[in-house]
Length: 226
Image (cartoon, rainbow, N blue to C red; front, side, top):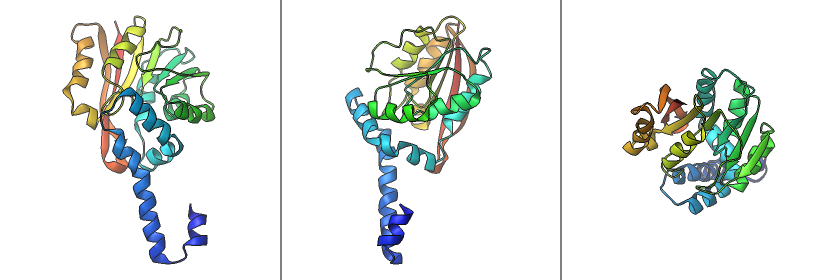
């Protein structure tokens, strides 16, 4: 982008104008990401976003994957046990998990284009495209991550229940709700459905940065199934 600008846009005013247009494009997908939609529209959005996703969230300091990975690491004894990265997207979550020391990571996502990006990260043992509400991979995972997956414009709170039911006793689920998700009381109510009756124990609940570039924060949670 910088080289193209130098070659074709030597005039200062033109450079500023095109840069502003480029920035508007780069924030366009984030603007759309938090609007409610059905599964087909969500897949279409993320397919279209895949090519610029890493750059856009990276520009805004995407912090939740590393926070989730470190939170889960604190409560997992066997870092070599296979872990499922649900809604892995382009693999930024898997990369954070790998950097935290998790050795075997499988990923699933609705978007084939996002999965292509995840494949290029080289951190996954296997990657599978799934359908909304479809079956999880046939494996016994003792830990599952759903990082930036549940919330407005993304997966419904039902996904939390699906993932918790898939875990064995003492299995761990790390997930996050950004500030938009936290505006809907149904999300934290979904957590309470597990903790209030003793079906799960809340090991971590921590508020912190999500996308600081747009002043957006998130809660990171770790649940242990009882």
